[in-house]
Length: 337
Image (cartoon, rainbow, N blue to C red):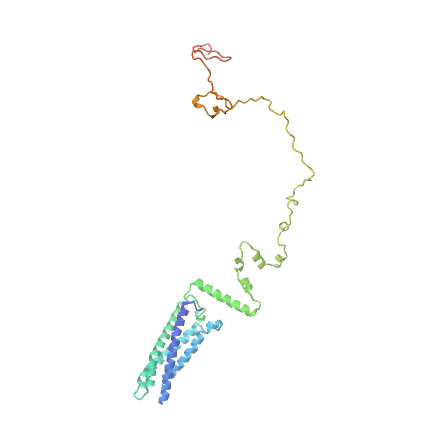
């Protein structure tokens, strides 16, 4: 309630005014007591100052009563502006009267020293107190006028419920929080079994605070008689204990241990190809290679001596031997064309 900066400044103003009120009350009482002892007439100004100090104490107590009792509404803005304005005007008049009567009539040759001293101390304290009261009055009035556009019924608000110098969002949040607090307090007074869950049920967003992936909490919270009597799940979704290996679809056909399965028949020994396949050895080349092209396939395996391949012996002076069913043809032979 006292976190607002304006309320803190208000407390500072009232602290200074209370201090000056105690001083002026002391000086006025001293002046009255000195006048009575000297057998002189008591100044009217001192009596008015005592009356003003008592009234200020009463109004200050009412202004801060709402801090301890929020429902009292004793610190309305309109009421505080009114009594502060009245007190400030009364203090201004008392200051002028103390200046005139105290300096001129109290300090005479026949007057006692106590009467003169108390009168002289009463004058500056009253003027300082009057100026501080006027400063607080104008600060409060200008602040209220500046907030009229934000709150239309600002004169009906109290000093503590008004959101001073705050944004629109902060004011809405403060009002909602205060309204919810009042509602909870009233409900707590009317019901003895009030708990936190009842307050969560009134919150329209309370159901969304649960796990968003699970709607069981919201279904349980807003359940109806129809939903309570309905089955929790479909028949096909009910959990049924399944014996693995015995119930479908995990059933397995069991085979008696006495039955021994025979091995597959062995293939016949005469199963072979119709063609006679003959494979050459890997170390025998299928083509002619020069010695520089010899590879690992010509390396000896250690069992037989290494024998390099022999190239066919052809006499270059003789014609190439003709294979079977072939003959030489002259180049100028036109008979075959």
